[in-house]
Amino acid sequence: MSVSNAWLGSLAQIIASDLPIIISLIFGGCCSNVFALELLVKDAPKSGHLVTLTQFIFVALEGLVHQIRWDNQGFGLKPRVVPIKRWLILVCLFFTVSVLNNLALGYHISVPLHIIFRSGGLIVNMLLGVWWLKKRYTIGQIGGVVMVTLGVIWATLDNTSPKDGNVTDPSEFYTGIAILVVAMILSAGMGLYQEVTYKTYGKQWREGLFYTHFLALPFFALFYKDIANQVEIYNASPIENIPSLLQSIPIIDSIISNPSLSLLRTFLNSLEIPRLWLYLSFNVFTQYVCISGVNRMTSMSTSLTLNLVLNLRKFTSLLISILYFDNEFGLGAKLGTFLVFLGTLVYARAGSVPKPIETSSAEKESSASRK
Image (cartoon, rainbow, N blue to C red; front, side, top):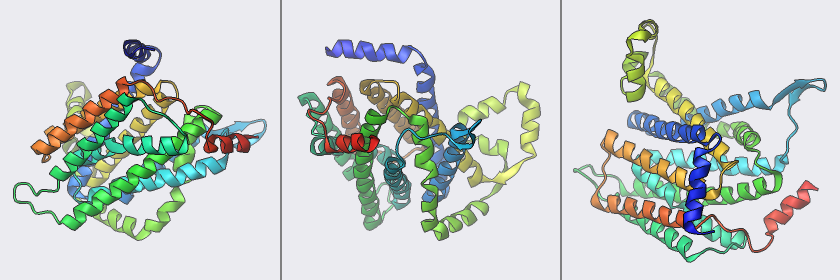
């Protein structure tokens, strides 16, 4: 298939069926989530564990509604398609990656750098794909990955220099970078393991969404003291009525300012809540919308289409973070960002990820467990 035909096929997928709605979920949810994360990090940079816990609880409860069955056979969970062993492995990886990504923000890692750094996982994914799934890649894919990696390094080095006289503790910054590196490696491994799982058992995205969040909840007991301290900080944040807090959220503020919603605005004026709890609620909801859109798109689109949409979403989130919140972003970081997204485009144009040249050990293990 030629490059032009691949792009036309991707465009046709975007226009057809439910993809416009799914793309709206991804752009609206993920970009709004970055906005909500900025609000939280600004006032409470060390709240990563509490943010992750509330996100997992919300998604698990929503997923439980879809997994419960009540029929002639009784009340309980629907039969699983994927063995519980596979979900447990994905749970451990998913939980660790989520905690590490949120934890890194507490080490003077700016949200723009966070976004760029997580975009650099292609090279790790490629290396693991060659080693584990015995994949082969085109020159275009390799070139795109190299450009993304160089862009990440450039942006990272630019952010090590203090801006406007604000001296950052180098040890804390490099600790944050080390956390992001570990998270990037684990995330790449998780993606490949999920790829093998879905290839073997089908695109069970709803089942995966529920079990990867529900089974991870006991892990948060490890961070009980930290979460309790974060709750105290949230409770101690300034108490304001909801409309005054929503003024910092442009789209929502314009909606509730509509004259036809005067009764709703009057009701909201009577409700007061600590500022950080409202920001957290907004973050949790937008995170759910984001991951729901991504999981749905994973189950119905080509890898080329998914690659294009997700990286355009990252670029939009990056612009929001830089322009609206006035994040520091020097020339080196701008050029690094350009390389990241140019490399992503080159990688996407090289075509969809090729199939393994032979059956991998992971796939053989999946087939055996299925029997």
